[in-house]
Amino acid sequence: MGSTVRIAQGSSLQKPADVITLLSSLRENDLLLIDEIHAVPSICLEVLYPALEERALDIVIGKELNARTVRIRLPAFTLVGATTALHRLPVPLEGRFNLNFRLEEYSDQQLAAMVRH
Image (spheres, rainbow, N blue to C red):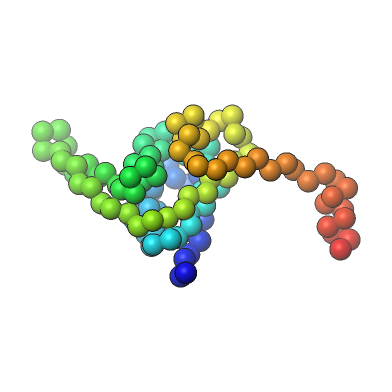
């Protein structure tokens, strides 16, 4: 398949340019994992939404009257968002995921059994 897994920390995506750089580096069928996705600021999520919905980046070039939007098509990719604080995930972002899984933490007994084996 030739896919690559790319991993980013939500806290490292602080500016829209960070998200644009990350998304523009993706290739066809890559998997992008954003760990602690709840830490991504809303201004950065605004860049992520069209990437998820339309596989496109809308980049504004220039300012005020000279501003224009350039649309860059993105390859097909899969986004996995991981969080330990689901309650901090914006509803519009959560709604853009087709699948949602909640994983329970291991108990102390389960962790001990894993170490023994």
